[in-house]
Image 1: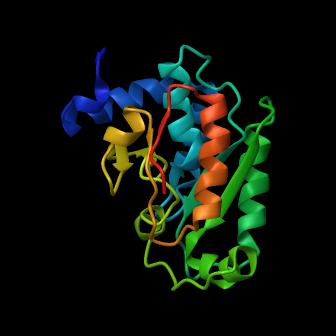
Image 2: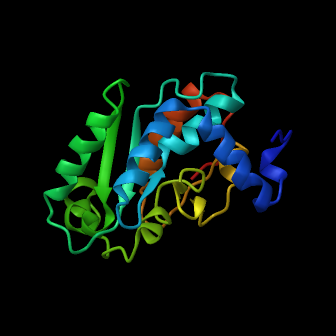
Image 3: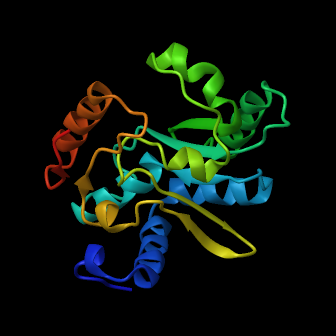
Length: 198
């Protein structure tokens, strides 16, 4: 599906467009395949692995070029806290042909370490979708997964900012410093990105 201005298309066209864009990134496809098979509760491939694939394509770059890491999130409050590491090793083993970093997080436990890392206490998340809704920008607050239900998208702020290459602050928990550091780095890498000031 070709959309000249995907950010202006209705959501029911944006979703298959996003699916087709991600199909061009072999790393994203490998993560999706591994996660689909593992069937972690409430899982999504999310954040940079999704948004930066779109921005690469919109800039005419290779879809996987320069993507620092791929975020795989899930929600399992009953899991052992060490299970994250075992899952990360398992997924990394399946992606050994690619030179990429994985960032795998059980969002049920983020509140236990977030304050120490970022200096701000947060309430426990209620789901992966709840977690995604708090991420630093509306464009990166997007997760996707595949499975029996087909291609599923979690986009609490829609897909227009992601597809239109707009970095807009999501101030639910992120600080100005983190937002500005991220967007400075992104604007240098993707010069067509529109950065909305804090």
